[in-house]
Amino acid sequence: MSELTYYVALPFVPSDHGIAPGEATECFSANAAVMRAEALSRKPRHVGAVAFSRSADPAVGEFGDAKLIRKFGDVPDNLGAL
Image (cartoon, rainbow, N blue to C red):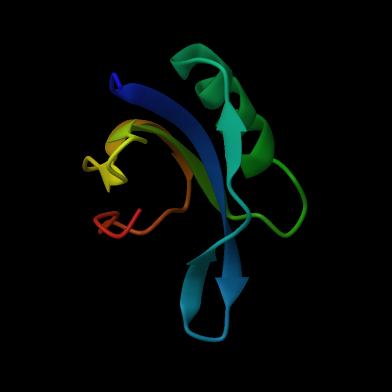
């Protein structure tokens, strides 16, 4: 099977330990992920959001590293755990 690319908007919320990721939203394209991340960053109780992509091969269950597309607001500098 061929490799697929997933586009995601991920908000960040305040937590007891600083900032934590909220609920991710899968999007149809990079542009849709950017627009959704921007909207999420403006919601009450959200401090920021990111749009990122990630490639995967569903046949073998392997995921590549996340690639940041754009960030909005207050997000952690280390996004390696996306």
